[in-house]
Length: 128
Image (cartoon, rainbow, N blue to C red; front, side, top):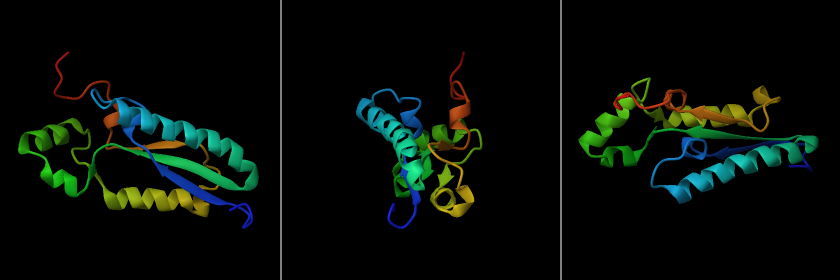
């Protein structure tokens, strides 16, 4: 990329890298590491015209979504403020934007793509 005069790198992280999920220590730690790597490399690569950012999705509708039992699927949907998981096409569109020249001043950012999961303190179905 340096030889070509720059470029863009887009990492895929997870909300778990910012707000850990109970019982998933290794996943949480690895996603937090992706976030740290993204920020650190953004600083080191910026002088070379290389931009680095990451996307932190919440629930994404994939083939795995169809394997959830009904109770789990309903609970997840109920706890997503928008009421729907992120579509894989939306994730791809954000990655394409971050890789494009339209995001030329965006570096070192971890962008949540989560239907609002990250803005709530506790899920809707947790009584306070």
